Each structure stands twice: as structure tokens, then as C-alpha cells.
Image (cartoon, rainbow, N blue to C red; front, side):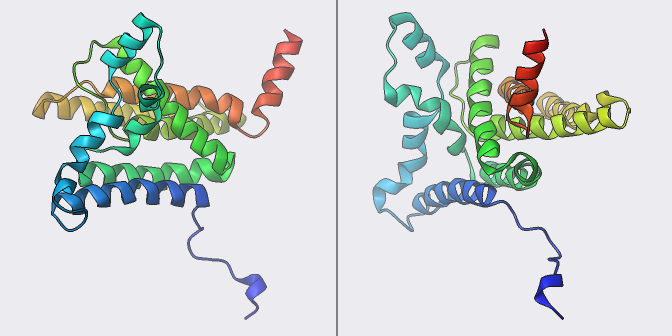
Length: 228
């Protein structure tokens, strides 16, 4: 059989998605192995806590920077570092599962760089929503806000596709509605924090960015502005 006619059973993942997952899991494996004393020596037991203190997003720190008008790099960077620090191996694993699923679909249509841009900026959007709509006492960690940004981009793809075939575009938001409903249910049953506000902020950021970073998106925006 000619290799030219070979079609893989599973489409390969975009390199950017693979790199992102490896980066997240690499950090998490270091924390987990260090906590068990398998790497890093005695001080490795506290690697996760040290990372949370240094890299988690803090609304209090953001408010302080706004008040004093100073923006130290070690604090500004928290906007983009907090998604890579997780509270547990399980949390990191679920984030990677969503990145593999949503990142693949978004990356194949938008491109790898655009997928990473949505991931990073959705994390920033989620952190800002967390600060603006809440008065949080706890730091924000974990990759779910940027993951919800990828879900927002995927929702945008469905929304556009439904518009092209003349169907109800509201159906594109079924996934986010189900996910938010599950979060609400778990919160009522088991208690929890208000991190869902950051997740929703990430979703809105990812959905909004899709108008710009989708193929031809910037050209469409410029054309519309010229017509207006």
C-alpha cells in the first residue's frame, strides 16, 4: 500500500497543544514528585506552596498596584503564571484533558499561535473578572479560566457554523450552559469558592478574541469599521 494514501486513524495534535500540555504536566509532576521526596531533596516538599505564593494571581496585589501606581514585574507576571500552578495533580489532569480536546479543535482552525494567544489572554480576562466582580480573599490558581477561553473559542466556531446554515445560533452556548450548571450543582452540594466567575470571564474573553484571531477575522473587522 502506498504511503501517499495512508490516513492516520487519529488526527495528530497541533504541536502547540502538545507543548502546552507537556509544560503543565511537567510542572505538576515536579510538584507531585517533590512532595513525595522523590526529587529535589527536603525543600521540594514545599515547592507547590512556594509556587502559589510567588505565581498565583492575587486581587489584593492588583488593587495595591493600582493604588500606588507601581507595576513590579514579579507581580504583573502573575496574570500569566497562575494557570500553570494547580492545587493538586487531579486539577492539573482535568485541565490537560480539556486543553487536549478544546485546544485541538481551536488550534486546527485558528492556528497554534492563535490558540496559545487565546489561552494566555483568557487567563488574564478571567483574573480581571475575578477581581472586578468579587472581593476575593483567596488567590486564583489553576488553568480553568484559560481552558474556558478555549471553550469560548470553540463556542464561537459553533456559533459561526450555525449562522452559515441558518440554524439557531443559541445552540452554540449549550456546552457553557451545561458546564456552568454542573459547577453550580457541585457548589450547592459540596460548597466551594467563586472561581466560576474567573471561568466565565475566561470564556467571554476567548469568545470575544475569536472575532479577531479567527482566519480573516481582523480583515472582516477592518472592513466593517470602514463601512460604518
